[in-house]
Length: 331
Ligand code: 13P
Ligand code: SF4
Image 1 (cartoon, protein in one colour):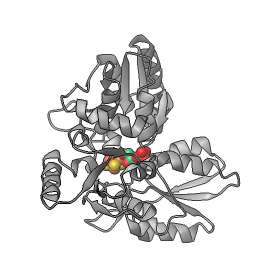
Image 2: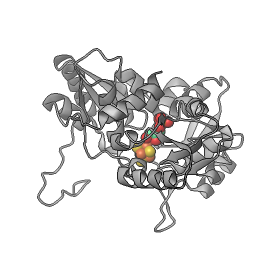
Image 3: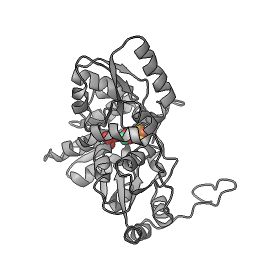
């Protein structure tokens, strides 16, 4: 019996050797004048064939340094869109156009515009700060963009007398409000992966690994963050483990593929992924994997390099969004 059942009307996926695919990708990169950017949440094999890996901030900046005519962005849609905005003359490819983001989906531009209108009608004096995990249409409606890597710095750039409307991640917003002391109006969005962590399993893992330290992404809810020894975005996590020479056990509260770059930069440590919890049954599961990031496979990276699609097309709202992204991430 095959390992996965074929979907009716679709040809079953043919398993290809990952090493052959990686060789083919290396060859195609040269032939097609392409550079691969990969987020830390995609499969380790893809990170290994990438020219640049990083968090959302570093990859947005890396996109501006690419010298080839094509960028293959192995990540999710809002990341490839941001790369296109910052490098308009490049062809930007995303291996699977359906690689979205639950957080970005939780804030639709029409709803945001309506809410901003309501606040203005009430006479509220505010600036809107958006997490980079938003569509270009949302970015075109806001004053600032933050990533987990520059959020503190940007919040400090919002004039002191202004209120802050923070969209769409309520957990990151709550955390930033706490560390910056700024009052915020929080949009009720959340990341499906970081909301799923099982607090019971995390505490059990902590008991089973005496002396271990919890490192957590600020997209996690407060009940996870209050147990964390270190809170930071993916690049900050990498720097943190690398700064500790003495071997430790780290319990990792973020997407499970993050363990790949952590192991690479600090192999002296032991990394334990925190499992997720299935709301329907209460059972723990592998939901600490982002299903959108998981749409990136070696096959799809090879196919998009070979075929030159799917491509992120320029959209009129990119002009306004680009100005906000540039002032927030590049200046
Ligand atoms: P960073 O890698 O910027 O910390 O973002 C994490 C994330 O959830 C990306 O979707
Ligand atoms: Fe979006 Fe969460 Fe996936 Fe990141 S991990 S792409 S925030 S759904």
